[in-house]
Length: 177
Image 1 (cartoon, rainbow, N blue to C red):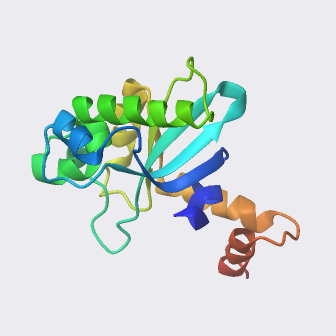
Image 2 (image 1 turned 120 degrees about the vertical axis):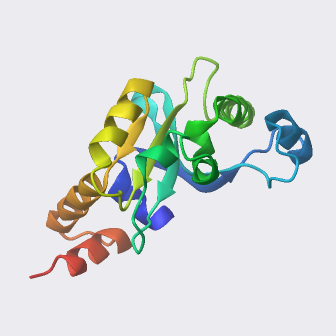
């Protein structure tokens, strides 16, 4: 996921595959009410220093599938909605956020006034669900990074001058005439 970071966000990446550390994994899982679930992991964490805003990002590509569905990210489809717990389960979101904040405070990465937000970066969205997902995320104060936004950011990377950066070079190669 680190390779995709400049494509999906203009914020500084602080890491990918972030697992909660502040208490024992089993204790955290019991708090969430899912004793057989592995430790919660956040796909990407971004930080915008000026705004003191960490962003917990769920990344879904679904390139060879129907794509991210509105009913899944809202929790209407309970089975698939489990893949989007950060958005469909308020208790899970609250515990993960609290524990992530504890971890980052202990590491000196944030301060006590930091407010954490959430985002979904989707490489492919089902049929006409993109606008509905965008509206739903906006109403909840979250960020939705759509396939068209990802493509636009790839175009901007490709248009940049020479940069000795794997992601920029890859974007240039993909969009070369």
